[in-house]
Length: 261
Image (cartoon, rainbow, N blue to C red; front, top):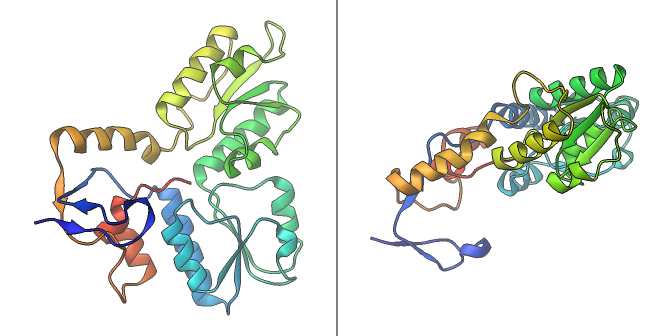
């Protein structure tokens, strides 16, 4: 029996006979932590609660928080003095963190621990005289915040051509770091190109990539080639009356959406 999707997005009126649930699926640990923290803030503080940038790149989650009184801003200057403020999971520039704390209200920094690790590595390597070749997407919130840790020492590259175009002399001390939400394919090609040009390149013992992001292509491939658990309910979202935290953590609709920071 086929079911029609609700009138939303690009799937409007498209008939669906079966939905495959990939395994593993769902939120990464950093996203889940950020959502829990913001859910705590909306329970503890009178609205509005402010959040610097959208908490995660998932419109369903963002819209639910808006309905709960969260105001998302792109500049800390938009936050009234003394208002509660959350900094998003993508990580923030040091100047943004300082401005948030100087605003006089409660500040919760929900930065993903893996992003914090990358910020620390940028600071340490830059302090040791390395040029940090940073694989990422220009303008992405995470990339903007990471590069701001040591702007004079970081070079953003989005592909192998950018590596070749780097204006660095041979033998330059180079460290290779990456935006945590890159796919394995995006990361590997740039890493190999950087290593080929700078054989003494330093990089962490383990990649900076988010485990959930790394696993997504493999889980999708497994679902489409061998089949997965069928689910015939509507994909509109959590059932009416379901709490924010339970819906983002356990309902089939939310678990089936891949969430990237």
